Length: 465
Ligand code: ADP
Image 1 (cartoon, protein in one colour):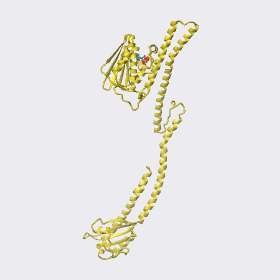
Image 2 (cartoon, helix red, strand yellow):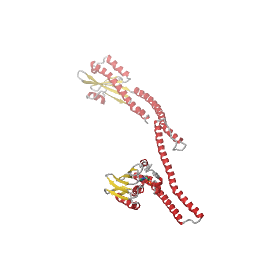
Image 3 (spheres, rainbow, N blue to C red):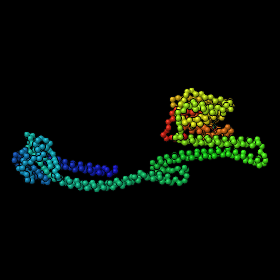
Image 4 (cartoon, rainbow, N blue to C red):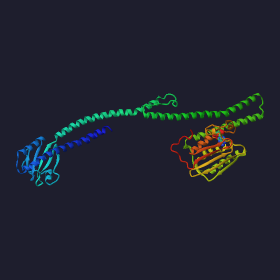
């Protein structure tokens, strides 16, 4: 279109104009030649009936130059000269002629069929009056002929240019899509494990950028895949441990039963251990299920206006007996009533984990302080404890799944290593933030900040890596 349209515009716009201009130029040329004659017509008293040889020659020359007809009309509209000798003595009443006498724009031309008619007033310079009108009528066939020839040439040009444009457009299109073909070929060429093969397409800037974007995506997928595999192997390991213990306990009971009567106390002890391992397995599975729920996108979040003071009080009430067992003081400090849009189940789980950890990793007769504060946009929950603290090097990792500072101790007290990962996911789902401050041996402080109003984000990123 970009190529073909201008050619047509040129043809129909410029050429038509060109024809008009050619005629106007011809008219102008005739008029200036006539003016030379009209001056002499007055001077030689031609209008009064004189017929000097020179003027007659000039008139017949003018007629033959343009192969046209020259007519001179006097002020009574009577034809006093007709180079064809047809209308002499007759009266002419034509608009252009009258216009010359009435002082209008007499000098003009008109097209009558294939004839160009130019009218020029004969002005008497002494009186400034119009003494007559000179009318020249010439055929315009030659202009039409040359225009037709020009049209033919342009038509040929039009066809050639159209063809050239189509061919050029075809090649241009091929050139434009070539990089994309290359990309497709490269993608199809990735035969092995898709996550391992990076592609390189340095030929074009576009393909280079695409390749870079593809490789970045590949990298992200690889990181995700690695973390998934690590998670799966961790899960299998964690789930297997209690099973292995149970198997050992059960086997030894069977062996002993074979050997003879099993003492009741031993039986009791082993069965208690087995029951504990079952509880452990159960808590790992419960935690895993919670984590999987949190891993989904925030579409799964059910926010409702909640009284946060009340929510924390309920958590503390539930955890009170566990704390009391070890003489740990559990205190809530709330400065203002807080109403916020949260998912109650998820937030309860998140805060329970923090407070439970404060109790679990505490010394006997210690304390756990929970405080709730609020400003215009956020509410803040702080959980402080007088426990064992977290070594600085471990602080970056405690939110990872299955990470435990002291594996054996954590297991002893029933930890799964998933609690803080669940807490972090839940907080991030609320578009909040969580921080830890701790000193080994002195205690730990976890702070959680959550917006009062839940604003769903357009494109929610995965809340866990
Ligand atoms: P777990 O189920 O083992 O408690 P978490 O994810 O809740 O797993 O915590 C990860 C690790 O962080 C724990 O094993 C523990 O070593 C450490 N930790 C968490 N909270 C505290 C705390 N309040 N005081 C000391 N250590 C803590």
